[in-house]
Image (tube, rainbow, N blue to C red; front, side, top):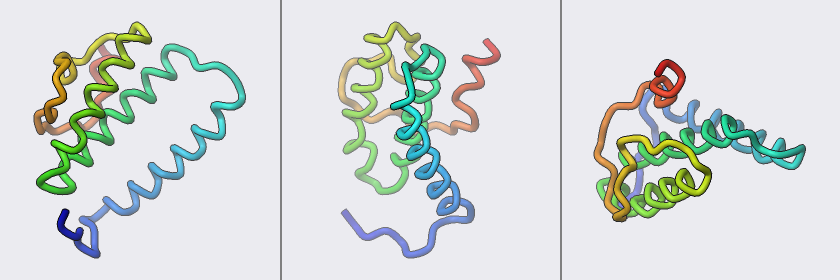
Length: 110
């Protein structure tokens, strides 16, 4: 793959750093006890959103990340979670590009 630029778009670097720190805190908290259905669904939705965002990092990224979409859809099935429209297929195809401002909004307001 081609090298990435040295400078990210405004806000991208800070948000990525915050995300990495939040993921570390979640990892540390997991040892404290069991997951609830809601907590697991929140975490799956976060990973789905991150994968969508990373799909734009490079022209080949969506194809490389396609198996992650498939794995997350399988995890949702195994955990008895609803399947978002974006992940209804079982083929390892890149997810369609779309704008995601708050992917949890549909679950929380619907």
